[in-house]
Image (cartoon, rainbow, N blue to C red):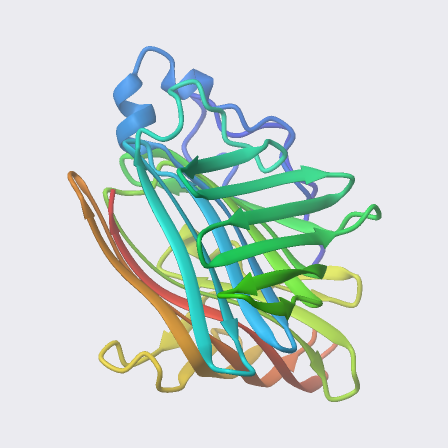
Length: 329
């Protein structure tokens, strides 16, 4: 199944509900939400959410960095798990109304958040994402992608009682960089994924999510993005043989009381059957006025099978992250 090209713009007020729902190849050119937010500042602050996240999967470490505009607040985090020592180093920040009302989220824009000795910066230039963090005990600098660009997937979904929701995912990116965690220098040569999300999620939101980068038994690269309970599963896809293969609904089997136990991930048509083995986790339970966020994000390695569109079944193995997230926005 070939993905259609992404539409030129996001849905607009008055458009038939669900008219643009679907998954598309490539980015949406016009990500403006001005027509939705104009004259309704409560919607921009209370309902509109956006973030950009990068996960890096290297031989010696797993790392992640994100900047979030949650409307009333802005947050950011950066973590590095050194596989050689088993040590996790993390920085995070919360800033009330950290982005101005006029901020227009876009993965092509520069995202910067900082205060005191901690700064986070993510920007896109020359076909690559440049991610930087500087903190007291942790520094990270990496380039994800390159001048040739990389295929991305856009998904648009209706949101009950809200305008819409949108995500743009890119996986299987080459990654190059370093981190310094408490004085220990850690190379970040490997692969990466980027998640840009913009929309108006329901007041109470739940999702399970997974991102992995690996190879099959024959050495063919493969990257996968999966979600359940969010965006109607429209962003489920595999980056395979220089293309993007859409995948159906996914199920996640996990023990919430023991998130470091193995997780089981499967798609409805049997295209994927994976077991995730956590090596560690970052977790957070945030209460900030009218918003709350409770999540656990284990990082580790996957093994299992992938059935390609031609019907061949491939053994695969790779590294990545999973997430169990409940939010009150």
